[in-house]
Image 1 (cartoon, helix red, strand yellow):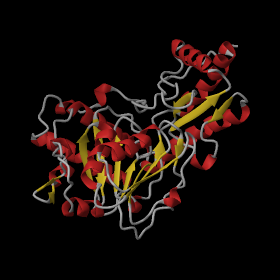
Image 2 (tube, helix red, strand yellow; image 1 turned 180 degrees about the vertical axis):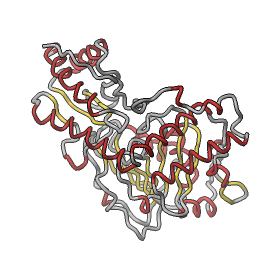
Image 3 (cartoon, one colour; image 1 turned 135 degrees about the horizontal axis):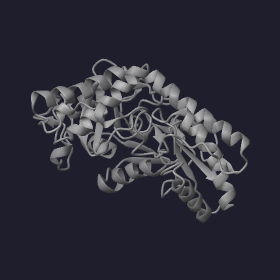
Length: 370
């Protein structure tokens, strides 16, 4: 029978992701609107975004946090174009974004010594193949494949190369071994449900040392430049952004950070996401027609949860449309380059009760299109 109870919040998109529970535009600090990012109030807000991020994530001493343009993609491009070149590179890819970094490194930067280590959607490459003397580029969580790294044990503590990690769908939702990560990027619109267009760039002291001792052979666009006169542009990591940010987006991000603090910090946001995955795991265990794309539980994402269905590609499209038309679930189709199926966001801004309410509708929709 057609279910009667619908999710109160049907937004299960994997980016931009659902706003936090209780979100209201009126909650934002509107005194920032119409003000310059170079004004005292603008600088204070941007510095707070950097400082509060570092505090909540409990970053090691000496790590810098900066706001950069272009979302997570911009942050990753800035990191790769600024830091890669002096050492061989190992780059890992097991879904579309990791494959994109492989393309950029091999076809755009055209670095001479690159090893690419790949795996199919839902699987991981052999991360132990990483050479500690090489720079290493990888995603932590495969946003389009539903496969995540279970840990950072494969990263050598005594490495001489840099580790550059795209963690946009992992930060604030998964445990990250910060001392093993030299560069980390993420965007506001993923785990915290913030607005788009802005990225976060986290640098370890080792990454700063590379920036100050190495000058890339290629021209650097202005919005990629992290140094001036051979020294780190420290202002970027105090909220003095390279280009003009949206102060409305800044206010929105600060609201999301305050929410994380109010619920008990990052450990609680991780716990909420983990509990959401457990709801989906219980459903899959008792439902014969749906399967995790990442079949191995240890590498299963607890944010961008990907599924295959015992349906044709056309039937899956019908199911996705049917749920959207009913106002039950929006934007849950698999990523365009991934295997046909569903992708349901389960990060901390999604309520467990809404996921539970969605599941009977999945069963109902399946019977309508099968």
